[in-house]
Amino acid sequence: QVRLVESGGGLVQPGGSLRLSCAASGSIFGIYTMGWYRRAPGKQRELVASISSTDTTRYADSVTGRFTISRDKAKNTMYLQMNSLKPSDTAVYYCNVDRGWVTWGQGTQVTVSS
View (cartoon, rainbow, N blue to C red):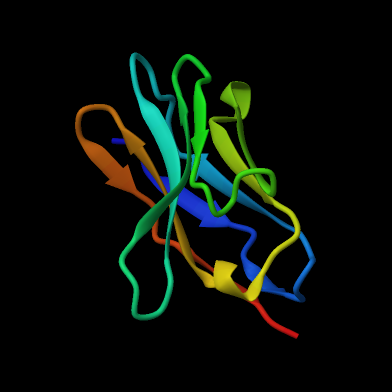
C-alpha cells in the first residue's frame, strides 16, 4: 500500500517562495494522476495542480504562472514550487494519487503573512 507524506510547509512573507514535497512510500505504476490540493479556513478543498503519468500538468487559474508541479520518478517524490506567494495561498496543502482509488497525504500547513 502506497503512503504519501508531505513536507516543506511553513510561514513565509507575501512574495516569498516555498517548495512542498510529497514522498510516496512505494513505487506507483500504471495510469495515474498525482495532485496537490489545498483547504483554506472556512473554504472547500480545491485542486491546485496535477500531473499525470504521462506528465500532463494542469493548474488552477489562481496559481497559474506562480506555481509549478513536478516529480522525480526515481525518488517517488512530487513537488510543488510556489513563488510570489499571497496571503490568499494560506491553507493546508495535501497531495494525493488517483489510480482509480485515491490515496491522500496528511497535509502540510502553508501560511503567507507579514
